[in-house]
Image (tube, rainbow, N blue to C red; front, side, top):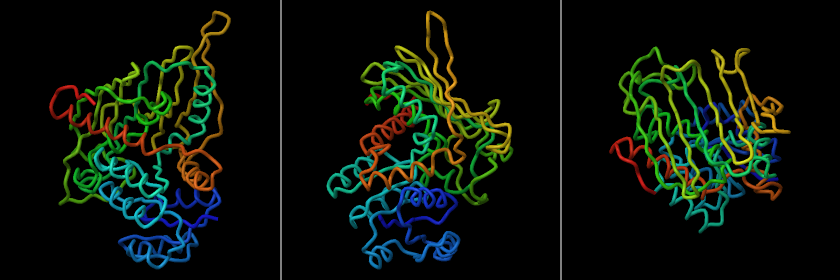
Length: 359
């Protein structure tokens, strides 16, 4: 049984703990710079040890096989490097890093140390995504030519002046925070190599508290608000495939939507969630559909799957454990994470310069 530890005692830790346990691992410790928070979360989840320092944890527990990292984005890469250099496998929250250069270093370190490095791209682990990937793999869809990736919110800024809105700590706003659908679209398309990116970012409403989300972190009146509120763009790939994306925390949309819609040479498809007023309440709508022709007729086929209210978060963590045990293939790889961060970097560069960026 693999022995795993959690770095970061925030609310997301519960998903990792539950997922690791479901995958057959033992969660033996929690570390957080706030030692009191680490101890509290450990007690809540029946975990025996807690630490206020990661290096101290590694020294005290050489038996650790791996860790998960759940901290502000700036610290993803440094902690992942520290863990791999200490001989630990790593499961890290998204984004993989705050730049492609950081991600490249992570990839090189994983290869040099022989450690497994994975990221919580949890939307790949949703039942809808597993089902749709099955149609991709069996040839039903053919080649996916184009894709529309969307995660838009009407009022979803995760706190004012906290680390989410501080570019030095977060790497950016919703584009890097809600990169899930861009990743999912590239996942369905076979993760083609990006060629060009053109994008624009918008800052309307970023300092308007009427657009604050119902979750996130407390406001900090003395904090920084230097990230975008929305990003829109277009990606071409060296295979000839293409993707448009729309990502926002605060924008005049009907309601919050995360969706990946694509058009293939044999069939199209969509994985879509329309959130309710309070998130996953009774007004939320989940759909998974395949668009094809049968007997010369246009057919929209509803794909029925079990609802996963964790949006794949626990299943994604379980996949990390099963990958370490050799029971499953990893849902994502460092090579894919690097391509994703190259797209994110290029989108921000294009938005700054006003010109397309070649990769």
